Image (cartoon, rainbow, N blue to C red; front, side, top):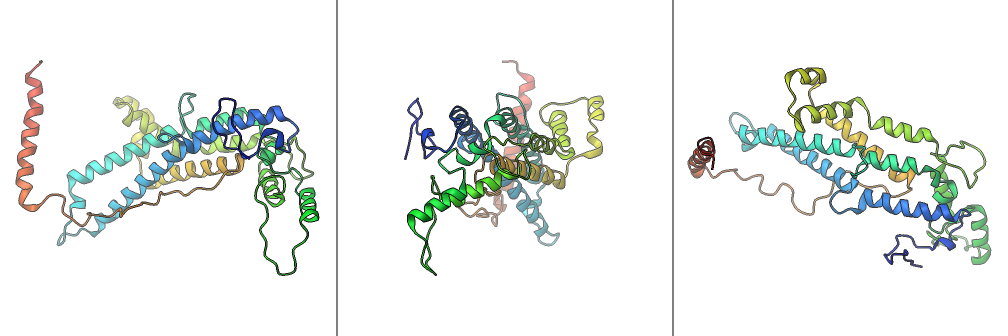
Length: 324
């Protein structure tokens, strides 16, 4: 069944609160409101969602690495435009800057941004709402999969030998999905091994572990780069204190930070919200290598490009001779 919120907007939940096998209905209502907000941050916002930021980061990374790989195809006897200093320098600097800024945005802990760190902090602040019964039953699943399974087969009858049937995947009869939900919650439960109770909560160590992951040395080094070289122009003394000359930045370092962000996002969506797993690099709906086999500038017009360059530089130099 469908339902609407008090504001009249469509709900992402298939079952009404009163149809859920949850004893603490007040907490369920609060959890549903927060879950809707968390999923909006993760995947709903068309421009700034966390998944969109991650996809953009990984698409740019794949595109840069492909162009970087293309540079290997150039040789002294068969040069290509991929190694043109003007183009290569612009691509390198733009890639590094956008990667640094994206990583920094994703770990920003301010309360007015959509970031992985803010999402993690907000879930931790409302962890009291994520009890076992709410985790498992917030949208119609039964809390006791054993009882639900017994009731289902008593009502439907056992299948004949060799008969292939489909099991319910939602609602109070979805005993197998309920069992999987309990197993998922076991991974983060504070109660540890033992009898499962409706009031079981999430182990606080789960949040500590994820926060620590977002503060690894690779991520911290990239934040220093952002502060000292991308967002601000630091003086020599400040750069020295940051140790920027010592650690620089490498593709391996970016890869380590990217892997951390992807894995933390995965753990939040799967372990804390029991959502769905998502891809890492977007699948292009077009030929991403189209026209890369063509020259950047037609050979017969390279002189014209040189003339444009000089005219452009002269126009900018004129800025120093005019105050109007």
